[in-house]
Image (cartoon, rainbow, N blue to C red; front, side):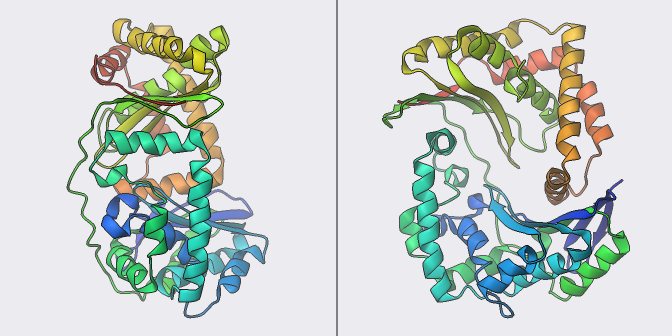
Length: 405
């Protein structure tokens, strides 16, 4: 189903053919905000912006027009552990996407004038983010729980740091970290795989093989806390969470199933039924599982009425305790498994999601599991395994609490 190739310089390619006239392509780079320190905090995200501001061959307008001019879309994002540049276009324009990726990744000049303008853009992004408590609370939670570790850093950085970035400091960080051993080209579309490989060899193949100096050998130590922050918000924003399994843990599939059962996107999730539907305390309530390479976090988020804080917390803990004390029946387990498998299939049906998923999987694991393989992993999870995991993860004293009031 998936096809792979590695260029001589170490850049990997992963591809799936789907027959669509639209192709989704991107480059994953295994560098994110956790790879920064000190005055470099916010640099990975700033570079994600800056690589579109000019290359040895193009000005900023020409970069943006290269894909948009043929009806495509060009975008990028940065997380704690990766950067992704991607595009969606008609399949006949895949070559121009691959060529553009190579140009901005290997020929960006980071012009001083454009960098100074982009600083203001990113600072406004930081200001906008601070005005969105439903998003900010996640970063604050990570800052508390991973205090003292690079994973605690906000991806956007600080206004102070952003203002002192220079073309020289950007180039220094970029040269040290954006190397061929950390890059994966991911494509989902209808082109012939041999043609894709030729495009990649043509535009990526001549760059020398380089290894990054980034070091992730220090795993984070999680801290517990119970903190209330006065944000003067209309709603009370609540985040309850704890450390869980990393991206390489054998229990990842089982916990993903448990998370989906607790507070996944379906209307019949335990938290939605027990709290929103029964009591009407909130409009949004959800749980999330974020696995990093050497750590993982589980969160429950809700926006609630301020007067319902204590009752809300009590109900959340009650639901989590149920998973600890009671084993799912055979029918309950089967329904939960089939629901999660169906959600994965629907998500994978969106080719852009699939491209991003296989790019990240290839970057982390060097392989990509098919939907059938992922489904088999979920179907092999037992009810006792879920209960054992719940007792380990949600043990007394394991949870941390952050409230915005």
